[in-house]
Amino acid sequence: MKKNLTNRILLIIAVLVIFLYGIFGVPSGVTGKDLADSLTKRIHLGLDLRGGAHLILQVVVSEAVSAETDNTVARLQQDLKTANLSFSQVFKPNASKPESVEIDGVTAANTSAVRSLLDSKYSNEYDQSGGSDTAFTLTMKPTVEKALEEKTVQQAIETIRDRVDSLGVSEPLIQEYNLGANQILVELPGVSDLDRVKEIIQSTARLEIHAVVGGPFQDEASALASVSGVLPPDQMLVHGSGAMATGSDADSVYVLQRVSVVAGSDFRSADPGTNSNTGQRIVQFTLTNEAGDRFYDFTSANVGKGMAVVMGGRVREVANIKSAIRDQGEIEGTFSQSEVMDLSRLLRTGALPASLNYLEDRTVGASLGADSIRAGVTAAIVGVLVVMGFMLVYYKGSGINADLALFLNLVILLGFMGFSGATLTLPGIAGVILTIGMGVDSNVLIFERIREEVRAGKAAAAAVDQGFGHAWVTIVDTHVTTIVSAAILFLFGTGPVKGFAVTLTFGLLANLFTAVFVSRVIFEAHLNKLKPGEMVSI
Image (tube, rainbow, N blue to C red; front, side, top):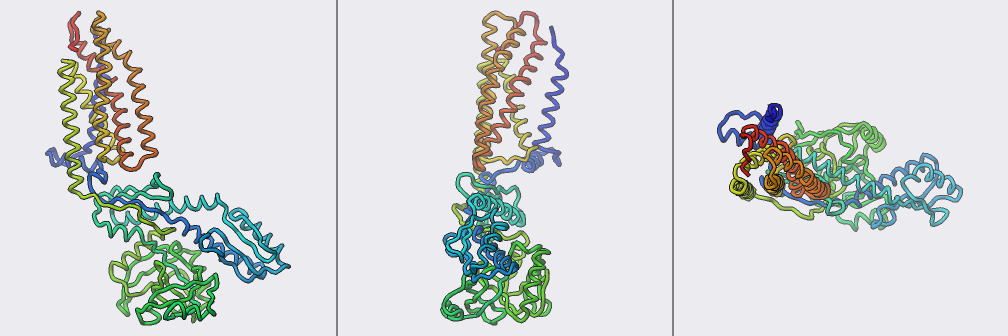
């Protein structure tokens, strides 16, 4: 009995059209160049095919922990003063253990009140211990420290992504590198200037404004002498030129308050400009509302005193506070055009929460990428032609069925990639080639089962029906187990491995459709044309 296959044939045609659109979209023309241009717009090439920059970065999370305890020092000082609790100093006793803060010089009468203050405001973040009745030590809880480290890595990823986006890089890969702790993988297709990328990414751009205690001094010995030879815990020595204040580019040393008044994360916007009077390049900045209020309080209370602009751990400028400043200001200095552009960009995208160390950095040339594409495409074409030839020779007329299903499988796979925006890598091409083999394997299982049914004396229609019915369970089992393996590779692998897992998974899903549904429709269409008693060519 002949079957009505109209609806199924229309479904196959619709799938073919949809996924051809996924590959090419709506091309501007029908020439080979037009189709190639449409293809490259829809299917993105990875770093190993297009060329570009590859970096693995280590986030120095201890700096973020240190910055957090610096903030805690400032908060403690303010809270103790507000509560009228006397103390001699709040400081971090050990630079190698940035998670600890110590309070010294608490009077015996205030011990209980200080302990209550610490319990009420800091017990969620710090464990409290007391070496004596007049001293308290706060140590950041391990769970809090771990959460802060994870947050620091994620903030670094977001900041790097913002900076890379400002460079106009298309299809960048920026993610946590699962093969190491606190590491980030950065892949930038089409980027060849690795030094420029490193300069933009690496700079912490943590522009900070600190109160000036003393300076400029010629050297550190002179700076220490100004504080009686012992640097208080809440102060620090910083080198720099401070050309705005001194009129000289010579290296000098300043004594600054350790806790900054405002820092990089307090900047809401920053734009390059030029001072209309002096002609010098400037960066015009705007602070957040909270930071603006804090800056206003500081400048109001310190009119006539100095403040230092610190960037990259060096004093870039020192200015005298002439009047109160709230949320808008200018950074003026001997900047080059590229420096003023970079500084404004870095301030806009926010400061990195910690510095970065380079574990690996390399570039892949565009010519090498082109060679990889050529070799990969050649391997895929040769593999397809050899497999198609084998199927035609070994399975005779039924080999045409397998070849048509294989062609549709490739169309669906590439269409999937075009619709999803997945990136094609060299391992991804390997996944395509492996998919070809898996597709043929499914057809071999079905065809061999049909042959067995034919040898058992069954009619053509019954043999085809039994062949697909018995092979179905085996095909699903092999595909599901392979998809699970691909999913594990995707979850725990890096960029190239993920590319292989993605193409393999898409190809296997497409193969389930083509090997079982499409191939069966083709067989049944052929059976409708056979005369009674005639056998299929297999």
